[in-house]
Length: 141
Image 1 (tube, one colour):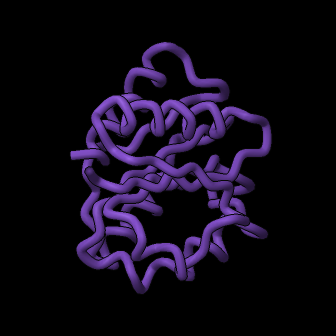
Image 2 (tube, one colour; image 1 turned 45 degrees about the horizontal axis):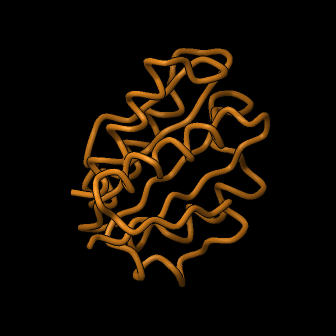
């Protein structure tokens, strides 16, 4: 059984909803799943998982949340090479630039993105929830 971590930061609950749905998709596909807020996860836990889903909404000028999520994620960047990961998050403005930049960072570090990233405007609708389920399933494969 594949071991999957879902790690997220959420200010309004939208990305938290996405994280729970990603975790459900991975569980439905047979993976063992642990869900963490970013303050409960760091690089020391990274190698304990076969795949990791990272979730963070767009903040400020389309950036990752900078006080909790970004420092945690930066500590994981050196470990991304060859790791199966997936990215997700919500936003309220802009065009998704934060996600494109985040994907590029992960690719440059050698991560294997298991599926297209999932983004949604504000609260996830049914389509976004279906995409999150599929993202979790991809992490479990």
